[in-house]
Image (cartoon, rainbow, N blue to C red; front, side, top):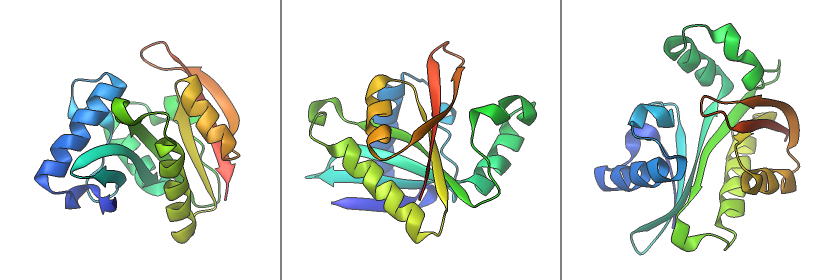
Length: 165
């Protein structure tokens, strides 16, 4: 089953499973580090027999900018780490697949669904951060191009990748 919800509309059990998967995947301790914005972040999840197999998140650039302004001391200092253009855009993030179900094409399916939603919502482009070779490979297959490289707070090399829809 594929579930698509705004962040506030997720039931308690699904929310716990989602948070647990994301925290483990991204090696974070606090929910705030996942950057899920109530009423603004779309969550796409693949669930089979009550097991969360994978998830991906999307937020419009307008909502992302508002979020960044309220949660970042100096927004200008992070502008090169996102892709803000004159056309309507959407940010895709938190791509995660349960370790037991990796290498089965689930990440590709989640990215396909995210792109489909972006097109339905009339966005002209999307962008994402890739922190590892696997995510770079997945997004490159979907015609995302590297727009910028930078190091994050964990000193990982991150690639900002974008694609026109």
